[in-house]
Amino acid sequence: MCPCGLKARYTMQSCCPPSYMEAFMKRHLRSIMRITWVDKVTNKEILKRTGLQSMEDLLIRKNLQWTGHLMRMSPDRLAKQVFYCQLSFGHRKRGRLRLRFKDTI
Image (cartoon, rainbow, N blue to C red):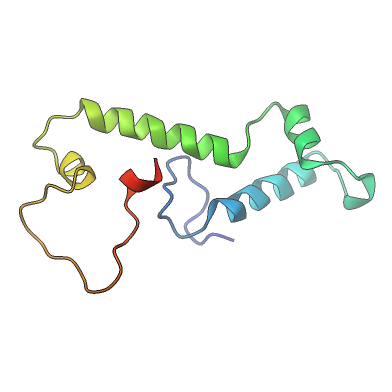
């Protein structure tokens, strides 16, 4: 389970991968709906019954919303500078470059 909890503003660089969050969501939906493994209900059927999107679709939509918010920000805001990698201070660590939020969109 993710130590940071499940948040709607999850980014791809967070502490747990989307597959863990997907499993967490499906497991709890099954328990809420009182569906056991004996009932042999597929994950697609569970999403159809609840009318929810998959966690991956939800995360992609939230990331795109955040990106749209960044685009409307003024250029002097730190979040926008970080997104475009235009910081005038700081240094990078040695080794392989980290995956940026911009690379996951």
